[in-house]
Every structure is written in structure tokens, then in C-alpha cells.
Image 1 (cartoon, one colour):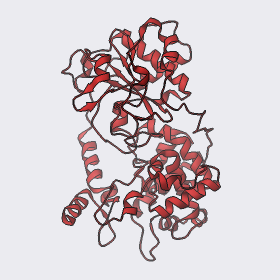
Image 2 (image 1 turned 90 degrees about the horizontal axis):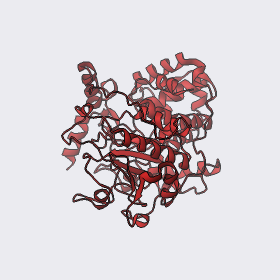
Image 3 (image 1 turned 180 degrees about the vertical axis):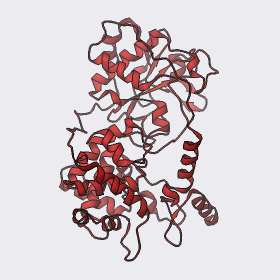
Image 4 (image 1 turned 180 degrees about the horizontal axis):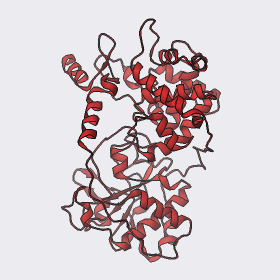
Length: 457
């Protein structure tokens, strides 16, 4: 299975190609763990995970609390594509992971339940449920082998004789679409989600790694070796790219922060003239709310290196008018060289360079805040430039050919209406399972959920 096949299997889905590509190796490993070895099993697996997560859009329950929920229900809310819930199930999942060599500590997910929002553990939680849990444990693959998608759906959603499971029409439609994909769902793609041993801890190596790539373009602020907002960096996943909103912003201002946000705001500052300054080494306040495959939701500050690029000169620019100003060549060259040096040192793929916009708005948790940086920079093009640099495609600081910025494209009226309908009413107008259920067992819509919250006060 490749990313295009995964998209076809998840239709309809609004998850980006970049996110699906990040998910793919974990998705395939979870299929193997769940013994998905036939076309029927693959169609059942993909259709159920697709329905439960709205096409892999959600890796956690949308609702985070409710007055009627116990402390256990709140802390161990639904996570992963099929929403692992309750501490007892988090504990059983951890025990299964230890028995299968995935973890050393069987209490890992009881102690850190938010880990199940990460793709590796979220998909494996689905494997555990598929094999070990539900109303008829261990029988899902047998039902799939018999082509009984109703029984499979009841095992996932709840087995009530004489009653169809929630979202039955969507589950059936997804099943039929996945069946049509045939053995494409089973094609194996070599994967190594863990990759090399991750680089962990504060990046005290920044100057040593960047100096060979930048030479005299590299500067440092006094005290950078010990600066940060507190705490220590964990396993460093990659890089998040930002713009400052003002080309006049200096490395010093990034170090000092703002009245509303403690500095430092990033580990690295890149000026319009291409001068790169190391600002700090510890965690910095650069990411804020957001999500991305492989990163904890709202928790990227300790897992990513933040880079603030001083842009634009015209501070009145918005996302819609950003095409009015190009990036300076000297700045883009240094950005490319920094990205290549860091990516090589971290031993991660170039896809681990993401924009603040992608993190804030287009990860599995959906839009967490509105950000549009770094400006009009085409991230797919930029990642390609970093890869060329890694591959030795540039002899010195050659001038990159930036793609022409394009006008901001609003969605069509039909697409906007459909998006509004889906968000308000749920898939096929049948509500969102993540929001809870009414007295009749029907999924709540957004309006229903808000009304319930108000009535419970």
C-alpha cells in the first residue's frame, strides 16, 4: 500500500498527503500486528478505522470533558483511530505492547495516556482492540473472512441485536470502496517508523553542526548554550519553520520574547541578509497549539527546533496578500542550508521540516490556532530544496529558483457548504460519535452537544 492507496481507502478524507505519508508506515505495521492478511480483512480494517476517525482526521475524541464524566473517563478519553477509552483498556493495551516487545513498561500508557494520540501507538491500540477487545474479543477477523461487515461493525461500535451500529450506511459504503481496491491494500511497503536512534536532549551541538554549512554566516548570542524557557528537550523530531511578521525583528528580540509570551521564541533566527544566529539551546515558546503525526498534540516545543525567519518587510501583509513580497535570495539560501544540516544530523527524512501553518492548522487534531507562517513559502518546494542540498545538488550558496507565489484560493461555494454541513451535522448528517450520544443512542451534532453543555451547567 502506498499513500495514494491509503487516501483511496480513507475516502472521503480531508487529511493532507503529507499527513497520510507520515501515517502510512505506522498504519501498515498496525495491520500486520492485527493479522490483516487478506483482502477481506484489509477492507474491514480500513473501512472501520476510516469511519471511526472520519478518514483519519481525528486521532482523539473531540470532546475532552463533560460534567457527567468521571475522573477516569476524562483522563482516559478516547484516543487513537478507534478511540481507546478507560484506564482499564489503556492498561491492557500496555500489557499487550509489552508482551509483543513494543514497550518495556506495561504501565506506560496508564502513566502517559496522551501517547496514544501519536500515530504509532494510536494505530497499535486499534490492533489490540481488533484482536483482544470489544463485545466479541478475537472474532473480528473471522467475521471479516466471512464478509460479514455488519458483525465487524457491531464488534467495533457495540453489539445490540436487532439494531444497526451507528454510521451503518457510511461503514457499508467504505467497505464497498475498500473491497474495490482489492490486493492494493495488502501491498507491502518497507517501513522503519522508529528509524535510527533519535537525537535527544538540548541541542548543544548546534554550532558544531551549522558552522561547516554556514561559515561566516553563522553567529551566536551570548548565553545561548544555557538559554531556554525551562526544562530539557526530549527526542528531537524535526524542525518547525516560522516567520517573525516583521523583517526588522532581531535575534535579540527573539531571545527576549514579547509582553504576552516569554522568550526565547525559537532556537535560531535567520535575517533577510542570510545571517543565521543561534539564540537558545533549550525548549522555546515557538509552536503553541497544534498537531502533527509523530508529535504530541500541543506539545512540540520540547520535540522540535524552532526557526524564526525575519520576514516580511511589509508588515501589513496577510495570508491573502503574501504573494506581494518574495523572500530574499540570501535568506532562502541560508534557510535551505540550515534545514539540510539539521535534517542530516537528526537522521530524519526531509518531511520532518514542517511549517507553523501546517502544525497549527492541518495536523490530525485539526485547526488548533490560526497561523500562516512562514508566509508564502511553498513548503513542498522548500522541502525539495533541502533534499537537493542533502544530496549534494548545490555547489556553494547557489541562488534558488523560487516558485512564483500564487493567489490565495478560497474553496468553492459547494465545498464550503459541504464542509460546514460535515462539521455541524457529522458524516451523512448523523452526528459525531466523539461528541457523545443522546438518550436514544444517536450521535450528537455540534448544536446538540453545545445545548447539552449549556443545560448541564
